[in-house]
Length: 258
Image (cartoon, rainbow, N blue to C red; front, side, top):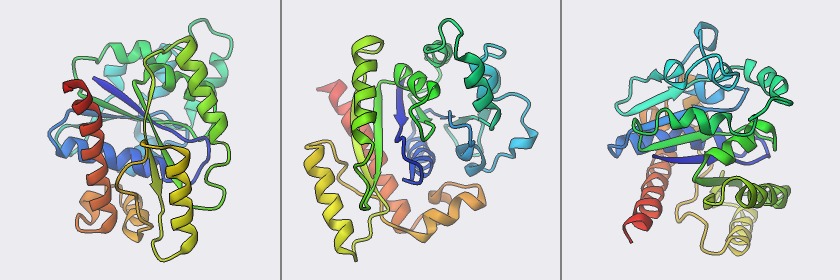
């Protein structure tokens, strides 16, 4: 089982959209996938059509030690794709955890219990460098960093990479940056192209071959509670995320086989 955190402390960069669609396309490739919503906004949960008001158990209960991860996981209508849902209660749990022993390894411990059940866990992290984010880093094998192709794209990334280094040095030596994913790329604008080139210079060899285009279908799909591959499988956004999912598998499994 490989755990991948989709992370960026900046909001609005397509983090949740990336988590949902990468998870969906990995399951379409025949992988057993758990999409784990670890963002108190719970957008990955509603983005798969789950009504947060009807949930009895969520990731907040897992982190608080009041429920097993297996009891929280829901099967989706998509073969091979499961969901561990979250609601805003997760934010309160994070505050309560602040002084609790083992607070940084709650997620890692929970994931150990489902290690045989999944090939991939895709973790939708909060848009902040919080206790939840650090839990995600410690529990993960890889990070995928969505970066919006806009003027302030690189702002704050240094801090995020510093946090990754600290976790790698202290609690998770195996943590690696799997790749940087340019999002909301508009090929018609000069700025978008310039930022894309800047991202490649900043992260040599780490940028995914297929950037995610600015695409209305990607924006519309969550309001229908479905991945873009279900909403419009022929859209540019759908093609792009399918290609990224393939590249993720090639980077991880190619690495393992090599």
